[in-house]
Length: 209
Image (cartoon, rainbow, N blue to C red; front, side):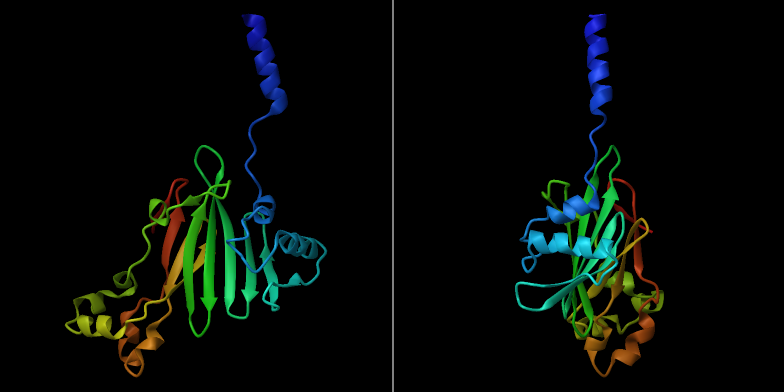
């Protein structure tokens, strides 16, 4: 029995621990459905161009130009079109492995972001399991929340866009649709906090700061 245990231990030491996938591998293996305008080959081209110190630009399936603007160990950013951006980031889980965070942002007049999460096998993870997204009231000051005119603001602010960004160990969100209120935007400007709503990754989920 001792000999068997010794052999098993030796085999495990040779094989080594299961290694988490790195950002580059995950990006290349990303399902086409997440970025339907870019192929696996084009994603590989991005990495080659970045490694060579060149402009990482490719022609996408729509005939437009896409560009990788950032490549780090745990994060990358793409300008997918003239009005689109994709950010991909890895957040290490307690116990090993990573959660993949994808932020798709429409960069039209004002940014509007949508989050999605995946396992390292690109299996979707429900957003609500990892984060409680900011609500409209989270962007308001105490002055606004106590005002009798709050209902007026909520009725006029029908379009409620927010942008998301990756930080060192978390996410932050900013309210971006104040200008859609129209001529009353200046009246309500001081009702919104200047700082974004920030979250920290705990290894299991994102916690509001």
